[in-house]
Structures are given as structure tokens and as C-alpha cells.
Length: 285
Image 1 (cartoon, rainbow, N blue to C red):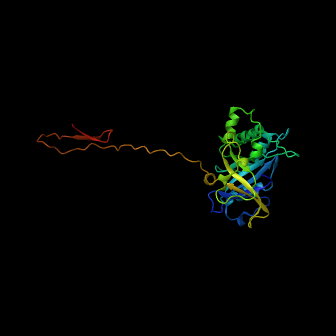
Image 2: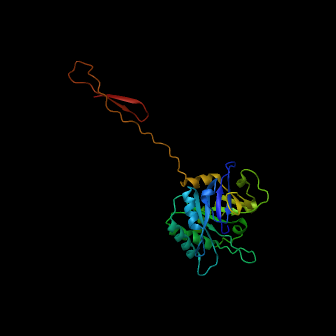
Image 3: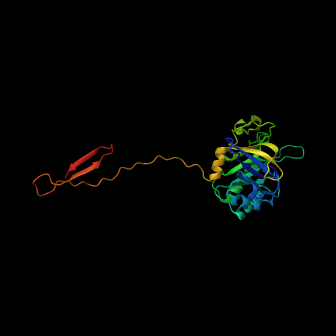
């Protein structure tokens, strides 16, 4: 993802959600139809100048939001831990909510167009952000890249724990097509754009087209589609709660005192109880 703000835009006609990338400052009061927003936070040790107004503006509009860091690989001084610290400090300074998501954008290539992505460095960034923000797991994290990059990485040096973390992180993938299908296009994600599911988590977003025009957003935009089920979860800010069958507790029956049935001066009491199988028992006393 380039130095942009990414907008999840719901046109209310598809099972999955369309979205846009934008590259110019946004007047949030003039933007309509927005469901959620991903805005750039940082790169190396720099805080993006649009981060604060966007982070605050997104929240003020009551929108789902996420912040991303554009990751630089192979840095000796600004290594993954220091890049994570820059991101964490920016987020903590502005505050974050339980429904916010955090994204690592790692698609870096060298001057020849060859990938320089290091997954071990990327996972170290995720780890340091989890610790820095005081989170307990990776459920609120996305990795943005391309299948071409991800599927050609050498993951053999990752240990079992690192592979488990990688599998738990949601994936946002880029891959462009000239004529996207109409409707639920996320289910039509081409194999060439699909990260290997044996190693990577669920694809929740697909950036599928560039150079679109949205009247309320300045400049050209990139189109995305976000999984509708995930969007509902993102907007609610609440993880699904398991359904627990109710426990039926039998009511407590007070003893029933029956008036005397004989000439005895002492009343006969009948104790009525409910048995475990639902039948009744009466005991004279």
C-alpha cells in the first residue's frame, strides 16, 4: 500500500464491500458512504503528517478504523523493533479503541523490482507492536502485501511459534485486474493473487483496481473489496461470542401444609418435592 489513506466504502449492493485508496488530505465531513478507514501512521521513524487529523477525524465520524506502518526491510539502525516503537508511540499518543486494527504494509522491492521482504523482520515488528500496545494476541492485525511476494518467501527458517503467528494474522492482498467481476468478487480472487493458505491467514481484503474516481474524494483512488463478515466484526469492535446453552435450574418448591384430615389434634404435613426426572413426590410427616 503506498502512502495513502485506504477507505472501505460500502455501496450497499454487494455481498462484499468496495473500498478506495486515496492520497490527498480528506475533509471527513464531506465524505459519504464510508464504513471503515485504513490510514497511514508511520514509516521508518517518521509519523505521517496526515495520521493525526485522519485518526481523529475517522473516530469523530464513528467509523471503523485501522492504522498501517509502511515497513522498510534490512535496516540496520531503524530495525523492526525501532520501527514498531515509532508506530506504537504514535498510536498510544492519540489513543486507540478495542475495535481498532493495526496493519503492516510490507511490499518493498529493490531498484530491479525484486522483493526484499523479510518475514522474520515482519513478525518481529508484529511482536513488538503487540507488546508495546499491551495486547494479548494478533487477532487485530493485518499483513498487506502481494501473493507474488508472500508465496516466494523462504519460510523454512521460521520456527513453529512464528508460523502459528503468521497463520493467525489476517491478509490484505493486492492484485489488479482490468475487468473485475460484478458482485461478490472477493470469492473470485484469482489463484495467482492468493497467498498460500498453508502458511497465511484468511484474506479479508483485495485491492483489485487502480485509478478510480470518487466525487467526494480528491485525486484518484485504488479500489478494494473487504469481506462483509469481517467488516461487521470490525465495525462492531466486538469479537464473536460463543453461544452457551442456558442451564435450567428446577424451581425450589416450599413445603405445602395440608389441613388436618383426621380427628388427631396434630396436623398431617405433606412435603411435596420435584424429582430429578421431573416427577413429583409427596411424603407425609
